[in-house]
Amino acid sequence: MADHRNDVWGVGAFLVGVLAAFAVWLGSAGFIGEVLDDGLALGVGLTRAIVPVALIGIGIGLVMGGKDDDTDNDLDRLARVAVGSLATLIAATGLLHVFRGRPGLDDPIAEVGAAGGALGMAVGGVLHALADSAGAAVILLAVGVIGVIIVTGSSARTVGEFVAKSARMIPALFGRAFRGLFDDPTQGEQVAETRPEPAMSAVEPESEAEPEPEVEPEPAPKKRAKKAEPVAEAEQQSLPVPKAVGNWKLPSMSMLSRSEKREVDKQEVVKRGELLQYTLDQFGVPTTLLEPIVGPTVTRYVLEL
Image 1 (cartoon, helix red, strand yellow):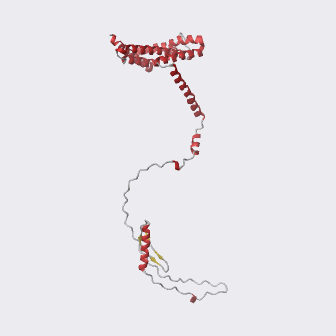
Image 2 (image 1 turned 30 degrees about the vertical axis):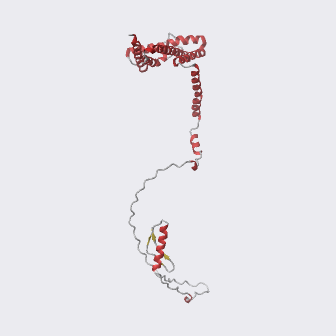
Image 3 (image 1 turned 180 degrees about the horizontal axis):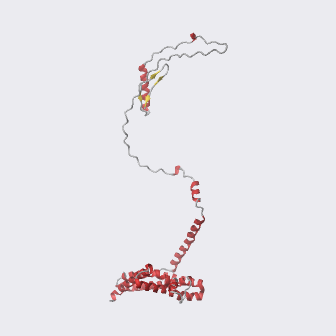
């Protein structure tokens, strides 16, 4: 039976912790839950919320303890955790009693349970009577720090460094919160609008994936333009002669002479058109040569892209 002593105590602590969790957190577990909740409220007040966690942790620690040759170490560790936890519990209940109305024995259980319970009343009430609220708070905080040091097995220096780091973070957090309350919500948009754009040379272009070659659709058959009829030889239009105004006369028609009629070498015209088409093709502009339009002095070449 001695070999299973830790297992028995561990299972018992775990069971009580689960029942306490149902009673304190969920308000259930029937009559046993009501008795547990009222008893914890009367004993330790608001700190009863962490009692289920502590009991479950103790139960798991006892069941999962070391081997027989580590029994002494387990007992020392258990004693250290118990003493440290008790000191921390005393400090917490005392602070709750001092700063939550300091209920007395004549008050109902609800008011006592909303503070530090009977333990907080015994510790916090005495310290408040001896050193007032400020002195009692300092003493209880010191007791709580000692309890944490004992439980964790660390040194006072380590705890002090942790508290100092936490204290340095608090002003920064509150400072950002207060600045956020008084900042103009539109200020961020104005700053974003007036912010200069970065130079294009500073941004390295991202390597783009080479697009897959697209299959070009077959071109539709081109419609061949109608052959333009060659312009006939220009004929002089007859215009009505306006009435003479003033003392002048029109010159005689004999002063005008018709230009000579030139013969057009159609083969030469076609060769020049093909030369023009070939030149454009060398520059990557494929064209189709249509029938050229030959005029009296100018020949017009029609090229279709």
